[in-house]
Amino acid sequence: MKRILVTGGAGFIGTHLCKRLLNEGNKVICLDDYSSGSKDNIIHLLDNPNFELVQHDVTIPFFIEVDEIYNLACPASPVQYQNDPIKTIKTSVMGAINMLDLAQRIGAKILQASTSEVYGDPNIHPQPETYWGNVNPIGSRACYDEGKRCAESLFVNYHKQNNVRIKIVRIFNTYGPNMLTNDGRVVSNFIVQAFRNKPITIYGDGCQTRSFQYVDDLVDGLIRMMNTSDEVIGPINIGNPDEFTILELAKKVIELTGSNSWIEFRELPEDDPMQRKPDISKAIEMLGGWSPKIDLKTGLLNTIDYFKKIIVR
Ligand code: UDP
Image 1: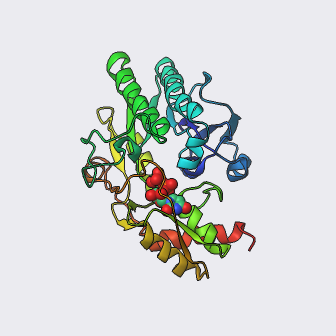
Image 2: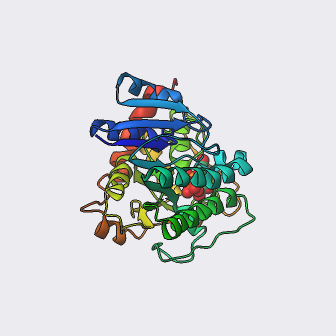
Image 3: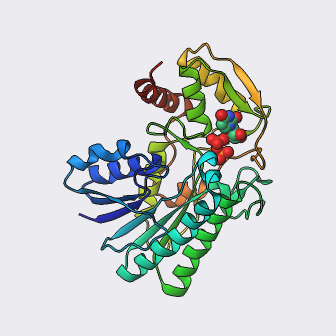
């Protein structure tokens, strides 16, 4: 049995990861300050004697003995991370330093949840890990993008300078059950709007693209990455390369929910990337048989089922 720390464990991805690690027979310690996670998503796991929940902000040092650390703590939806940009930078940067210091002290392996946002508004498509990105350092997304880029740099330097065993994954757009209804990301927004028969709000003309990955495929990739040999440090893209326009997504959600909602166009936020699609050849090569298994329709139906249960019409 391994002892595993998951920071941001009460967030959308964290809850799925904690559950899966517990099911595989590990002891899981979930750290979260509930700033963008929800205790409701995770509280049912407390029945499991191998699960511990600790309310803690990663910008403050934390000490525990574990074998592995998954560093997920950071608000990840544009609405949430732009709400308190300074705190977002602190969470990425100070959180990374605190967790890397911990990993170094106790000899744990540590995985950083980085992001496709390190590529900014990319002018190379699809995005391979070798691409350095196109990020506006003073734009409204910079608190997240640059915070995560700095965290990657910290991880690589703790590895080179202090021999910490690190893994970096760049996570592309992910969706699924346990997203918050007010999360602000496109999939949850559209499904919630559809169930409430409210307008589906498309920012810009809806021609911008994203490639949507179902959360189970991501969790599978994260665990496989953690289990690779010490030479594999990444960064490695984890995502689903099936690419859709936001307009296509809106139409799909309306169709699958059977909603009477209509589409309304709103202003495009600053620095909103025009296109995004992962090159996943490295993940396929390095992660022992991993590839995304769940297509958009199947994943959306599961997610719609989840929201149906929690939304009162
Ligand atoms: N978007 C939209 N309507 C919404 C929420 C988002 O059209 O209600 C667009 C957003 O402008 C972006 C894309 O959907 O182009 C994906 O946005 P999201 O916030 O999910 O994540 P991002 O990939 O931009 O970080």
